[in-house]
Amino acid sequence: MTAASHIPESMLALYVSGDLPVWRRAMIGLHVPRCPQCRQRVEAYRADRAGIREVAAEMPDGVNWNRLAAEMTANIRVGLAAGECVAPRKRKPASMGWRPAAAMAGLAAVLVGAWWLNMPPSTTQALSRAVSAIWNGHGSVNAYPAHDGRGLVVELSSAGIELRENGSTVLGVSQDQAKLVDVSVSVQGSASARYVDDKTGQMTITSVYAQ
Amino acid sequence: MRSRVLIFGCACGLIASGQTLNRKVNLPADSPVTLFSVDWGGTDATARGGAFFVDVHAALSLRNSSQKRVRAITFVVLSQEVTPGGKSSFSVPSLDVAPGEVFPVGIDLRLLRSIAGSAAVEVKLDGVLFDDLSFYGPDNLHCRRTMTVWELEARRDRLYFKKLVETAGNKALQDAMLDSINRQSDRPLQGMQMVRGRATNADPERDVNLAFLEMPDAPIQAMNGMARITGSEAHAPRVEVRNRSERAIRYLEIGWIVKDQLGREFLAASMPADVNLAPGKTSQVGQDAALRFPERTSIQAMTGFVSTVEFSDGSYWIPSRTSLNDSKLRRVVTPSPEEQRLTQIYQKKGLGGLIEELKKF
Image (cartoon, rainbow over all chains, first blue to last red; front, side, top):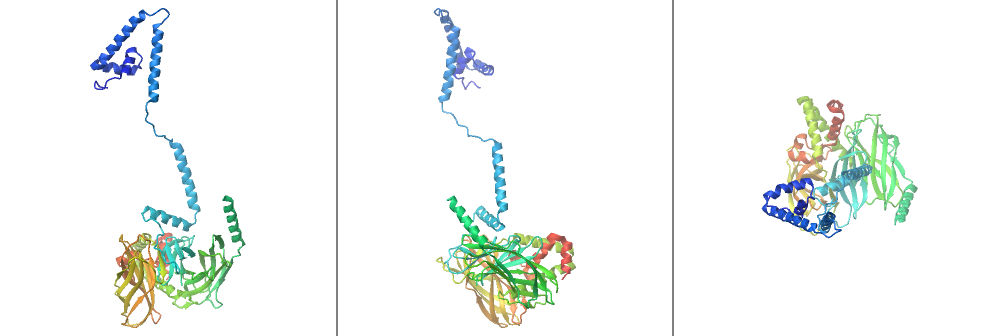
């Protein structure tokens, strides 16, 4: 607290009346001797208190000054508190404890894992392909040019091979138990997918023919 | 709404359970392989919407009843006789089955077919290739040529790896296996569509010339080539070839490599052609087909290379390992089925297991 930043008048009043907490009173006590403006105000408050005491000595019978002063102090505090209530306040963002968040993340991971493990491999591969395409910014996975709708289309993908007609699959070939290692197409109208069985090492090649 | 979904689900279940799935393996009476046993396991048909998913999980035990070693076998798998234009096949390359030996063939695939008609799965023999390259079977799917090429590639690759061990030691074989595994894992599976016939597209067309990878030992020389590009489609490829060998040629295949706007190269397709090409003669081969890539793909350049040649006497030419060491081909061409099988053995059994396997041949 420097001399350049003055103490609010309400605080000075409470300081003079001895109604501040010890640490705040000490802080203001350090500031006031070095700040002529605050010191002047403190002296003015003290003079007022002295004047009031003199007037209090002439109080009518039945009026207890000490009790009246206590009530006035209490009213001032109530007023200050009410002022804070109606003043615009900064809202703190609602914070959620880390435990509920961790529990929800764990539950989500279990559900996604169970769902993923129970999907057929071909679907998993297709989904992986879709996520990969989105991640790489390739947009729609099957965004092929529009087709005139006549004849069979041989389609290759990392999930396998299939024949399509008018946008629908008419013959699909896939293998759930073996690993797809290659797909190829012949412009004569066929496609092949090469699989290897991890357990036996046997190579198998499945093909579809559009002729 | 919920009750409707439940009723629909129950109806589908009833339809599926009410279908009797007829399953049979059809081998000719004079077949060189006979059916020892068959286990259809979980082969079943499931109705989904307007179609059946036919999951074929069959373990066939076949006996080699011939006097020769079996190297490859192909079956036609039918789930419906009148699928509109569609057939599927199942091949096992890289076999080595002695006469009288029983060998397993696992068929594990999912077919999709129309819900109309009866549900049936039929497995028919299309061909068997023996170690002397002779063949048995109706060959309805032209599997003889395909299986012969696989066998020739297998012999080439086994010989290459055996020589590698002899000349440079086990460490060289290990390095070659690791290099092959890396190439297989680095090679992306490119999605695409292929449609036969003339594609209709309103986008402007442009002609793009094909560059060719020169293979000095190839009996075919590709003179020039071109394809029409429309957006992300390439269609109507045409290639002029010359027979620079001393034997007539009746069949050839050209590999078609495409480079996209990001500089990525991938093997888009193979272009087979039946020809009648006398020594020294030239001919133009082409296909009325279109390759479609995802719309964001922009085709920048194309390269062709000769991948298979069949002479009129029934013998074949395939690229040598030296030719396949071209940097571009190494990036885009998949290793042969045999090389993939050998790398699988290396991964499972280690270098010792692989060397033992090579000694069998």
